[in-house]
Image (tube, rainbow, N blue to C red; front, side, top):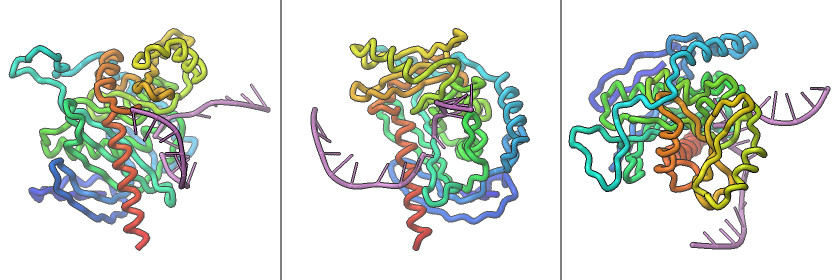
Length: 308
DNA sequence: GCGACAG
DNA sequence: ATCTTGTCGC
């Protein structure tokens, strides 16, 4: 259940019927930071059934849900904006990619069911955070490999919907997700799941490889090793079936460990790679890195308040 | 049976 | 995901 009041005093729709408590903090900076709120994880999954308990029965419905949503997946560029071309001025009316979002969730060490979901938006030109909102929640759905979305998507989706409901001009034109896109056992990871439910172009960023279709870490490292001259280059993740699941990239020269980029929704792999490279100051692209750092920070602060 | 298994 | 200090380097 939730009822977040905005600066204008509007009340957002109530979502689920779980017990609630909330606390808010508000800060004012150059960037926009929204309210903190505590809530129970929604037991609903945007039109598709999702059970709060995770019995073996859910396993089947989860797979059905993924297969159902997967039919809507668009693995090619499908957006109105375009990338700014350096050295060439653009038409004034032209929509250029400026706001890139990043989402992540951090967990409490003490209470593993307590988590902080976060949404940040960065200006692509400056790579500075221009918007941030987070939500401290209690998760009831466990993490099962291959079903991350059923645990994490509800909170993240809500953060996006709040922003959109307020017609915030900083609403992201593209979202980077901490988790894979089609690089997934059934080709439908968290980034795809979120992309479809939010109807946003999404890119999946994995910090670890989810072995799929014969693609192994040792195999990837082998190929990367063969082209160590090209630190900025990538290795295509082609499975035994011939399918291309994504790419492994050593985004920074100093990082041996690659990140794994895969298509989420409404974007082609090559476009996704270009944009990820544009946002990499370090190994992990800045939208994800900032989401990571900030959500972890909020979890820590929240624990401090609770232990007093 | 054994290993792998995003976050 | 989380548990965890110092340390080497630009």
